[in-house]
Image 1: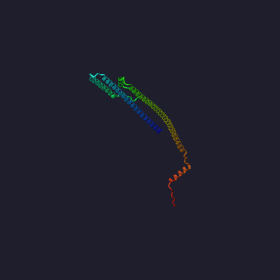
Image 2: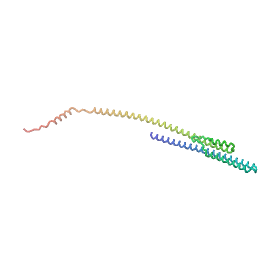
Image 3: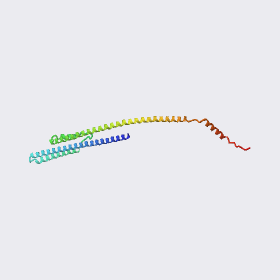
Length: 242
């Protein structure tokens, strides 16, 4: 029984170790998904900034071509100044985006955009259709990965629950077996005590009956013994010649 309990305990420890390893693996996968989402969001922001800078450069070129030759120097200086300011502003926003920390919850698979990213998306409503399509495809792929991961976790959770139910059933069976063995042991102990009492009683009866059955000494033997004792006490008489 002790060996069975030790085997059951070792099985429980192995199952618990496997559950801990799978939970750590799940946290790893969730963290990687969050990292992938953050990386793709940063790539989308960089693409939007590049598109915006390309549009601003094209507008600057068209404006410079349409201006007259007399005021070309001032207009070029103002355009270069505005372009440099725009580039500086975009660089600041890009650095702010790269330095910003996205909040992620490793205990769940849900991922939400922060307020900073929402404001950045609203700042560029006129982004190109290709970038939007690429972003939608990336979101769909991320959602698909998240759904697959959730289904995998649900199946793992079901397996863990089945294993826990089986372990609980084995524990209940072992407990009932222990109670049954304990009851049988108590019955055997009571039977042994009864047998010990009966054996002691029989031993006393045999001893008493043996004392009673000892034969008494006969009367003739007692008289002979008494005469022998008297003769031994009287000294012998010596005979003398007259």
